[in-house]
Length: 328
Ligand code: KG4
Ligand code: ZN
Image (cartoon, rainbow, N blue to C red; front, side, top):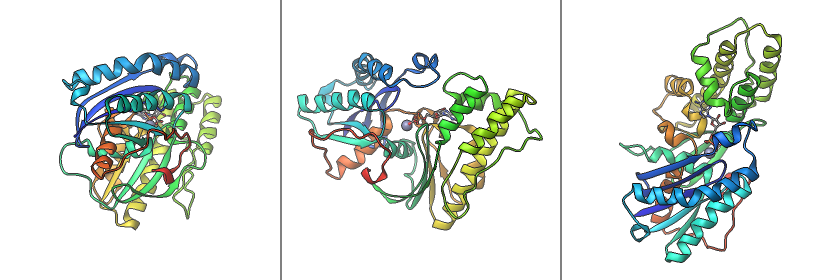
């Protein structure tokens, strides 16, 4: 079954054709990064207007790259939430309109579930259940236990900033371009340990995270002007990676998980990938970077699984904007 999937929850306009929930026949992403860089963050109104411009060309390109027309598509999927309302509406309504116009099955997909299912786009054996999922993106930092397809139990998450948000804010403090994550990671390659020890919020007794104290400590360190940007980037990245890898590996051990599945934009971070692989007691699966950051292939992967189970979404259903695992 070939699914045309559309994703527009934040600032990437994306479309993909996915076969049987596992094989990406095409995946096209139009990034708006340059457009938002001058504001130092995503401007929702600018993002939704840009989705309107990008969407049709991106869908056309995704079909062409898969050597298909709409005649060869069996179902349509769209990201339903969470995300920016104005952004979601563009992609979700386009997906519904295509399904309606072509009389095709339609399904709305949770963006966070999409990030997790990026792990099904990787060649080779499927992930094994039960799995512990670490979802780390610009808007989310969640530890979620997955007993089988579609069954999620959120066991911990951030109480303040998401990991990617912390990377982006610290990147800005360090004078690096937006989005901070990849730039902090790149600067850290040239950095190393200092006498400064940035704090780790272990939140003992819980599997929650907190990055706001670390961000404040980074702010003070920047103001002191005692350290090179590269070294501060290194120290910051180590502090985030230490807590994420430390808590994930401990929870995986406690739960007897068979796999750790990493998902979301921050999963593109090489230090995080390395440290999770080193510390976790079971195989760690991390999608290639192009499927870690926002894309539509991951939405098509979930859609393939859900459609095969007979699930459909009514065209009357609308988007949702808040982070809510109960809606997965
Ligand atoms: O999943 P994503 O593309 O969008 C959301 O759903 O939020 O994640 C974007 C986030 C941004 O905060 C970005 O800075 C971060 O992922 N990111 C990284 C890296 N690449 C992207 N953070 C750290 N290291 C990276 N290499
Ligand atoms: Zn995302």
